[in-house]
Length: 122
Figure (cartoon, rainbow, N blue to C red):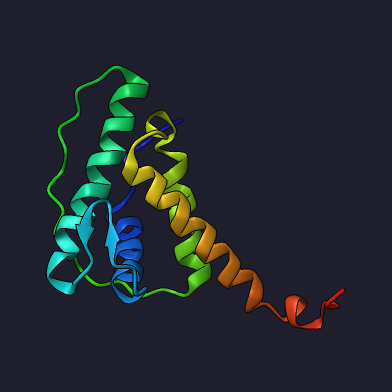
C-alpha cells in the first residue's frame, strides 16, 4: 500500500543532502537556503507517485524544512522508504537522484560496519 511519506522522512533526507557535498539534487543547487525547495521537490515526487498509483488528485502539501540530523543508516532507510513510495515515477530525474543517493549511502553504511573492517581484502 502506498502513502505520502511523513515529514520527518523528508527532513532526514534533505538534512543529509545539505551536508553531503552534492552540488545539485533534483536540479536544485544544494545550499542551506534551498532546503525547503529540495524538500518540496521530494514531496511533489511522492505525491505524483501516490496520485498515479491510486488515480487520485491529492494536492501537494507545502513543505517547510526543519533540520533533522540522523545516522547514515537511518537516512538510508528513509531514502529506501521514499523510493518505495515513488515506484510509479522511477523515470523522473528526482527519483534518479534518489537512486544515486541510495547507492552512495549504502556504500557508506557498508564500509563503516565492523563486518566490513573484519572482511578479507581478497
